[in-house]
Structure formats: structure tokens, C-alpha cells
View 1 (tube, helix red, strand yellow):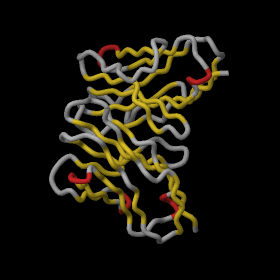
View 2 (tube, helix red, strand yellow; view 1 turned 180 degrees about the vertical axis):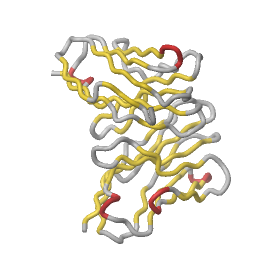
View 3 (cartoon, helix red, strand yellow; view 1 turned 30 degrees about the vertical axis):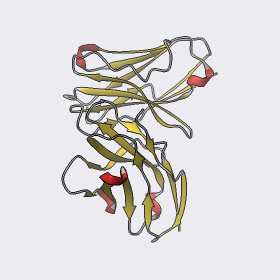
Length: 113
Length: 113
């Protein structure tokens, strides 16, 4: 597609349930980022994938968070045993390589009730 | 740890007023610098970027930013704002030793008629 696509756009889940968020990057982009955007907190880096290299997971807030990128394209962010503090907008971005501008998707708004 | 500071969290201006949003970063090495904008209900978009060369860079919609290496700053400016500039503005830094874009907490700009 023309841009970064994320699904679902909105997700409401019960506390304790697992959720999966999907990101389709721009075709040909080797770099893929996940960020979390909370009110007043800006964009919090979660994880970064670059080609076939091991991902930079340094931003994941706990071991309940994980992400994978299959075939160097689609990525899934999984949050296990969701907590209310996980409520936020989760943003995915991709770039041609790690030194070029990133293009963002519309985000997935996660609400944990 | 590397950080990005945006000193103005909320700015209110009248149309035609001049705008300057501050951005400072803490990293001594080579950096790539970005300003992103998020209009209400839309995804993050790149306003402008600095990789190298002329430290005064021009972006879309009349925005410009100046990289001052000695001050570790990359302030965003626009001579005359419009109502349509109402948005949230994010400064971001990418270092040559890291991979992730690090964002500031953002500045919310409201332009009144």
C-alpha cells in the first residue's frame, strides 16, 4: 500500500486478556518501529526492527510486551495480561533504512477496561 | 541517557503571529534531527529534517528549523502562523550510535482566529 497500515484502529479489551496489534509497513522499508503515545507523555519508543538483524527491544516496558516481524515485512505487537496502564495509542512507523525519515501509521487506540 | 526536551508544552497564538518552538537534545555525537506534526485526528507527518549541510532547513507549509550544534538545539520557526497550523509538534533525534528515533514530549499549538 501507499502508507503504513495498522489494525485494528481501535481495540477495547478486558484487563488480563492478551491483545495483538498489527502493522503493515511501506513495501521495501527495512526499518520498522513501534511507539506508544500516551496523553502528555509524547512518543515512547518500544522496539525497532532493521532487516534481519536482532531487534532493539530496549524500550519494551515489561516482559508482557513482545513483538515479531515475519519475513521482514508485517509486524505484530503482543501485549499479554493487559493492564489498565497499557491503555494508549500504539504507533507503528517504517523507514527505508535506519538513517532515513520514518513514516507513521494511524495507530491503534487500545483501551483496557 | 539521550534525551530530547521540548520546553513549550502548550502554546497559544493569534493568526499571523510568529512561532518558535524550542527543542534541545543531549547527545554529543552526530545526530539526525526531525520535526513531526500531528494534526487533529491525523497521523504523524514529517515537517522537516536535518541530516547534514546547511543548518537552516526549510520544510513544508512555510516551516523552517535551525540546527545550532553548539547549543544542541533544533528550534522550529514560522514567521506567520495560520489557524490550520493548530496541531501537536514533536521534535525527534536519531543518533549515529543508536537506531531509534527519540521524541520529545511534544508541544500543543493552538492558533486562534
